[in-house]
Length: 373
Image (cartoon, rainbow, N blue to C red; front, side, top):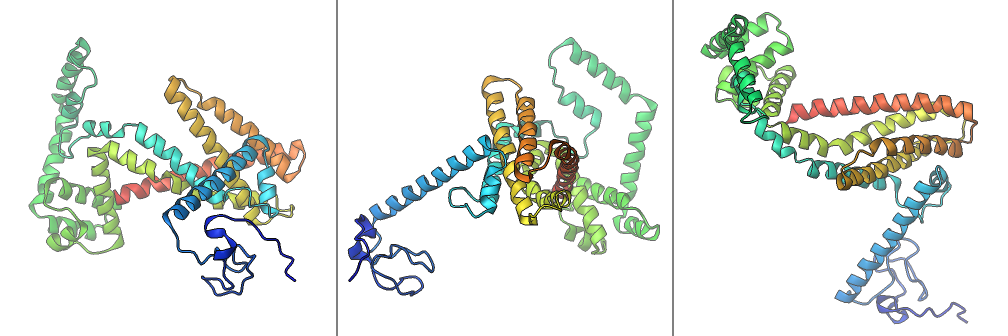
């Protein structure tokens, strides 16, 4: 006698559409099984209709929204609790910490990027072979005023200065010598064991004043050796010239890649947390999840602060930073269960490490962005 309850369902979930074998993996099923216990595939033989498709879409959306609200509530109101619940196996009610943090980081940096209007900065970019003083005069931020006239007069007098003329003349002469025979000039760089900066200057001149666009062009036209150092010097020169002519585009590209910097240093930072709490019975993954949750809260506060500042034209980020610092201290106490004195010491040391790791990750990303720009 079958004692399993007859569950009233709708649509594809009705009992009459259920089979005795999983349509995905072939695992044997009971008629009362709504899902396959082996692969979680829905137990239904009904063809998918348009109504079924939209019903499942909105059901999944509402389910995610419910998880999101519970995750936000736990993060904001109970410091450290969400990490304890998650590592103890209570994960169904919360969103994945890695995916949650990545989403928040992308949202925040997209907001900063799209509202920053960095494309306007490209108007003030300079051509590589333009006189610096002429560029300053051309892109003066003050127009039709006595200040502008005064600036122009000072720049004109500086152009007549003997040191400036000597510098500009020397640079032009050096460029002329290089361009007269680039292949021979580059050979002198090899024989004199030139520094990376000298090779970068060589490629800068070629990019500015010759029909060289790629490293392969320099290899083909001027017999430049295909070495890592030469390629690095070429890419650096090209990137710096690109920044000079399109500063806004470079900043926009750099900001769009910042979320990846977050995930570069957080796993490294988790190792320092593990060392600080090495006597605690937590694994490296537990510390990593703890750092994901707290960094996620940081981005939540940054997003709120950015919205408030944009709407009301105020500066509130320092307030939210203080809120985060207080929250982080409380989260460390609750999660690791240590006294105030020990927590203060570890709190200060770990925050200093966090700052330098974040700075290092940003510098690495900045340098890499120059190389590929």
